[in-house]
Image 1 (cartoon, rainbow, N blue to C red):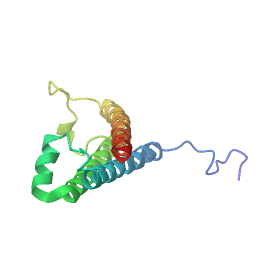
Image 2: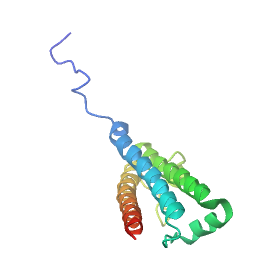
Image 3: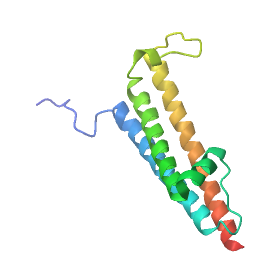
Length: 142
């Protein structure tokens, strides 16, 4: 054994290890969004809580509040996973690695753009969860 061997703490983290906390945080925020939406629409409907998304209103009419919130969480977690996996390794199918003008893009650009989209979606989901919590607190105070 030489003096330059690396231990588990000396190695650089892999790209997957860097992306994994972002995906986990995104999935957690999606679950919190579904939970806070369900709380607001179930317990504070008489106080004026409503869903602003027309597609979600349609889903509530057809499958109910719990079904809409469950579907919202499942779709959101799947999208967060898709962004994280694309940020890690690029698209599985080469024809998806194209820009708006259908020109082929290098894999590093596809991964970089997916990582930025993942970070931006985390920011947006944080805003949505914060807005839902603010609405619940305001409706509880009435």
